Image (cartoon, rainbow, N blue to C red; front, top):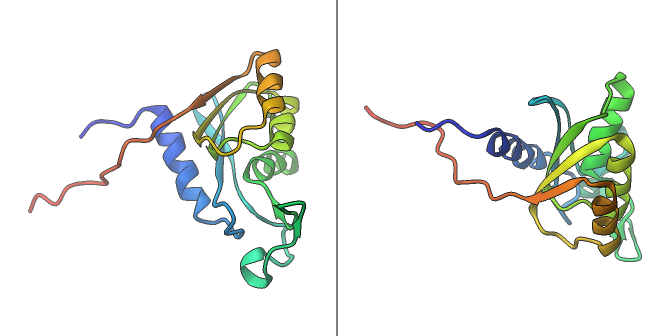
Amino acid sequence: MERLSWQDYFMANAELISKRSTCDRAFVGAVLVKNNRIIATGYNGGVSATDNCNDIGHCMEDGHCIRTVHAEMNALIQCAKEGISTARTEIYVTHFPCLNCTKALLQAGVTKITYKANYRPHPFAIELLEKKGVAYIQHHVPELTLGSSDT
């Protein structure tokens, strides 16, 4: 069996984490990585200990669900709560980050963004990434087989 690359491994984790999302408008997962170690994860969902979209519906404003905290923000917030530095980290996310998440990732010291779905990339987000010299790479995860049934 061929071993997964780090990129495939982290993206597969992001896809798995997205299954916890509680806003069905987009099932998004994020994995924050430092030195090939996962330091935090996040998925789309409501503020802790409050209602989720899955339970009571969306809270829409200007075409966006404002009830949901984005996956990237949840990963950054997890680090903030636990006192974990995000300087010189990478993030693997199932969807291209929105403008606000891009700004937060840049401010937090993320040096590379790897994403799967090219979901509405904002031109200003791309401009900021390029000005800061932060790589943003679309990644295609190979289909995984989790073992064989050689019996």
